Image (cartoon, rainbow, N blue to C red; front, side, top):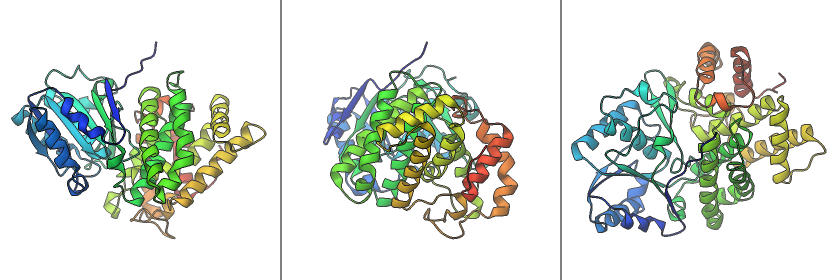
Amino acid sequence: MQRFTLPRDLYHGKGALEALKSLKGKKAIVCVGGGSMKRFGFLDKAVGYLKDAGMEVQVLDGIESDPSVETVLKGAKTMMDFGPDWIVAIGGGSPIDAAKAMWIKYEYPDITFEDMCKVFGLLELRKKAHFCAISSTSGTATEVTAFSIITDYQKGIKYPIADFEITPDVAIVDPELAETMPQKLVAHTGMDAMTHAIEAYVSTANCAYTDPLAIFAIRTIKDDLIPSYNGEMAKRDTMHDAQCLAGMAFSNALLGIVHSMAHKTGAAFADQGAHIIHGAANAMYLPKVIAFNAKDETAKKRYGVIADEMKLGGKDDDEKVKLLIAYLRGMNDKLNIPHCIKNYGADSYPTEQGFVPENVFLERLPEIAKNAIGDACTGSNPRQPSQEEMEKLLKCCYYDTEVDF
């Protein structure tokens, strides 16, 4: 038996933010990140609509990119003091992910972060509050997923919380919010969405309910991401839908080791002056993981279907896999994303010598590989890597060398 879970209600299209007026409750807390939602007036609109719904509203702002365990605990305390029956998170993946984790702690004050991270092991939520997620970026799709990513900065590790309980009750996918994204964010979130769709399609948990969502998302992202990056707002709008469909697919089909590696390398070199941004990490690692997974015959056939759907050509599955890898690398070039960690600059752009020194990478490699194997996303990858294979794969992602094992 498999399970397929999505938000009860999903409002989409321009002006969908107004759906907040339909929520029923007494108190709402609005979780938001940096300044963009304030700057463009969307936070004020959201608060206004909630007040129109008859609710008392409190704003919890300043949630950082790659939210920390400490931010989660602090936010949960604010929720406990205020007592909302609606948690509304607006912005990119970070405020929505943080709010999901705060929600767990709000409902169960004695739960530890370690217990939160037990895969599909949460107790039932919605005893105190329901959850509404409003996405402003076109990539994470956390507005429809059973996942949240929280960073433990003391360990330098990003931890995925995975449980259908944290799937939002209401999702609002309003493309007007996504039109405010800066170009770099369009690139990174777009390749995050492409990775979600491809990993969901080849995951061992794929099914007839997730496959059509993943394939439609792949086709749309292939056609629309580059024009969206270059400023075509009609394509920006369709990308906002495509990333959400990719999220519906992966939330139920799960992911693979592209995400395992991205989670475990993202903050691993923070002491060197930067993070490897999640979407950029996925973009760099995806071609390498496709080459690794394609040694599995079932995965190779499914990559062949993806190549066919993208109309890439190829006489057999081996050739189709090569064309798919080449196409994705070409997308990275057009989006100004590096091909490997060695050339990943502190600003995320390609450079001759990136911010992660070779000696530091090699010193931390065994631990990163071990953590990646233990990541929640590894279990549904079509080919299970050994410690040695994961280290070799990560080296290929550092040096941009061929995966031949």
